[in-house]
Image (cartoon, rainbow, N blue to C red):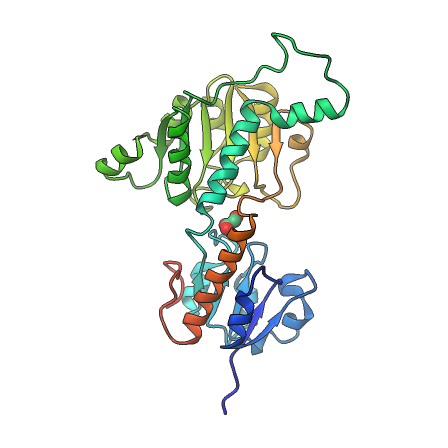
Length: 325
Ligand code: GLV
């Protein structure tokens, strides 16, 4: 009898997906919270045929060099910026992700952050709890409107489009930018106008970032572009922290032109730029866009489906283009 392939799962996952994986592989689950530094993996790296990873696990050249048997990296996330895709491709390691199942949950949180930032909900909560509320006044805690505002979406993939659908319910105008413009019928169906990226910064009252982090999108929200934004505008980021120049954002929040921001992701998680922490006009969520029970179980399940497909020699349902075979 041939030995089962060995798979390391870097962290316990919600639901029963890992039990399914055990039918196809000898599974070791990292329970230490140390991810790939867990001795259960680190001391036996060369024996594993596959890894199921989180976005906090870094799969780089050095790690891959220690894992000559590796055939797949199944990321429990839609973003794969934690993985060296070129090196995986060179080593014929299949990389997979978990798109679709987290689309609506992520758009829900982005919309929530937008409302919270525009209408100062978190700031108001802090004030009330601190006993600082002195009563209703016509000039107290004025925010900015969400209904009827122009929403600029950077990255009109699944999540960007889910955001656009929500925006229509709020009577918003939607403009979007991305590398490839959508077909005119799609633009009409989404009620979204295309704009080159710099134009989008000028045209929008609220900007929400939904592109993946790649070398091209790193700091796509730069100091220069923040300076183009409308007076009193809002920025929301639920994609990856690296898409926004955090130091520039903190300066723009302190001095204008933008009035508030809602963030779920940061350049150096779990650290938040101290200049952002010092500001009251930024809502800070701890990377929880997909943190909803059914969504997280579905993400684990899709990652395991991908892993099992590779183990069985089938095409993984969500193989990331440009990585592995
Ligand atoms: C979450 O950030 C993801 O990429 O799934």
